Length: 67
Image 1 (tube, rainbow, N blue to C red):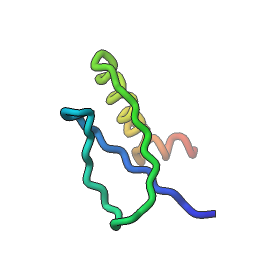
Image 2: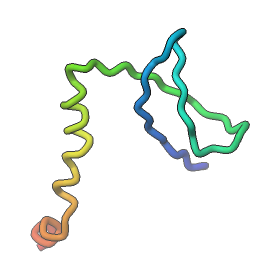
Image 3: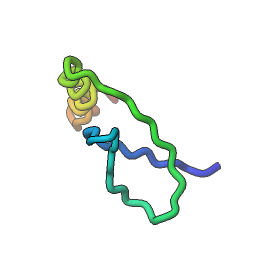
Image 4: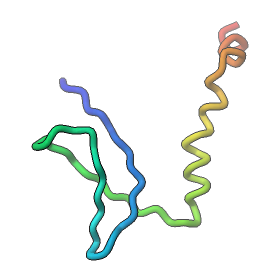
């Protein structure tokens, strides 16, 4: 089984529906692209949900949890 690395990019659709991103992959690499449209009304909520787990990643919480 091969491992797959997920890369996330925030991009803006340009004229003619074009989206361009520079990726750290060699030319000729095979990729699968998923496009998800994000509504502006939920952007703050989305950003908060992605960063909220950092609160639990600290040595004091680990010490209390493991006790």
